[in-house]
Image (cartoon, rainbow, N blue to C red; front, side, top):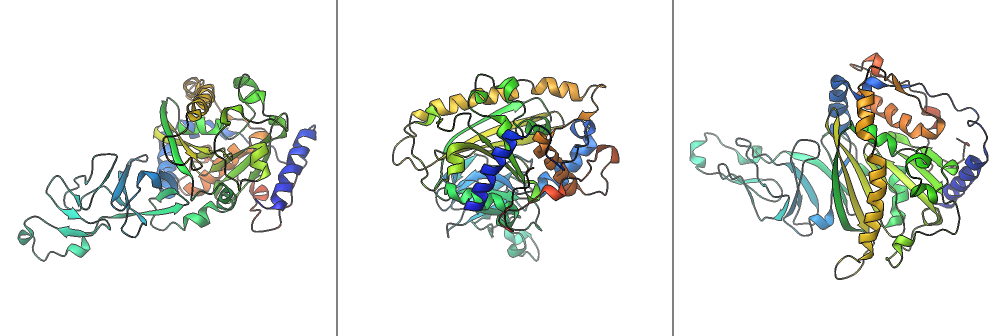
Length: 414
């Protein structure tokens, strides 16, 4: 994070603390239609045109540590085989034999020289080439080169592996934009996998994701945790292209340090904003990441059905050297999962409410504009064609979307 961005954030926090009304020039946000949270036809459009066409996190390189290592990923329905290649690169394929669709692997992780379909024995190498067919004599005019495993776009940012089902998608780096610029200070090429957990939650994925894009709720449900050390009135927000965003919330006391991370290794290149405040990125569509010098989680939100979802929390740490993860991580993860429990406690009841006849939509303040920004991007991904007018959001936040690394970063006091 360069000096201009750092100063802009400081100015933004001071401005937010001092203001006594809405930011000058900021528009009233129209209600987000309730239909978006319950309509099966809208959710199908969302899944096919947004989820299946976005770069999404799949795994960490620690989970595929050497050539031939694989990871089986299936968060969006189709099972994807992510493989570490001979050249140490990473590629991804559908876990689907080209013969009659048998799976190539069943275990979540492992290592193979060849991927052999258990149904009829067709064999593929680590690059997806078909190299052996049982009774090949019985296939007239057979050309193995035409029957490689079907690939899925796969790229890495540091040690993080992302996939995209859209063959026409641009590069991951271009997609991430300012997120990639700022996350480099956390040395993603050196960060290690520390811990994984997941929970089923009985609500539409957007119900819970909305909650993680604002600090307006801190004083209600985090009274004994987050609200004790964060000043939500000082939160400053940046809206970025491709639906990404960042908010920075200052500590109530500038000298406050998290006692739960004492003794953990730190990333020396992390700047003062992340060292002295709470930073939270939304990497569109479904990653919420509050990074710190001692590591970070990816909080991931995955759709399952119209009214159920999976919440996944994956922790990453600076290199702790040889041996097991330091014991202090048990405390750190435990404390964080208390906060997760607070955030999810009302989700099933909110889902019941959004399904009721009394729900018309959500009414957002300027503090909650990251939510509206997220929904605007969803509609852009879906496209106006086929989008029900009664479910659409008005596109009004364009003037407030900036990329501080493409132009001079001037805080617009919004």
